[in-house]
Image 1 (cartoon, rainbow, N blue to C red):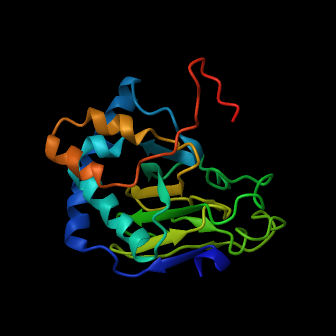
Image 2: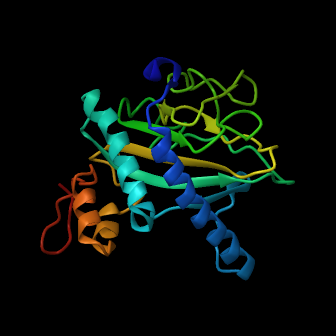
Length: 240
């Protein structure tokens, strides 16, 4: 279903009690981010009215535990040749100047859509209501296979899920965040895995070394973050 239509919703994948702990941590981080923005030191990425927050495995062990649970999905479906490329929080508060931002996730683009097949898989973990009211993700079904589909002309759908659900999607699919018309922020965790041959969007090995607690560092050691590195000789040449 993911490879044909572009996405599926796995119901009740996470325990709600655990996600409530994650939400408490997210609320603290988000309020800190808003405060830093007010001072002029905060996050400058504001695509589509969203605030993006990364370096999650450094911020709390809850984020490490959560991505470990996501990794079990890879193991269960025998696709553990993938490694983590991105892991971040995207928060959206009702914005006057909201605009949709249709895109495909790395490493895909309109130009190479047919070149890279079955080399990536993505996950949305909604932390609360995820529907048209809170600005859930819009996706263009079958756009992961059909390069001719256009989200501005063809029919997109808005994903709906409940707390505890896991949304699995093909990063080749056209998608965008929706407009949040509720009176509270919508938080969404996103994790994207690519084949190990691709250079990741985040250097998780560097983040692992920065973790203060040894117990948490050991937890990260079990994650799929290792990457193949291109060969280079003494002079830095890597032509082969």
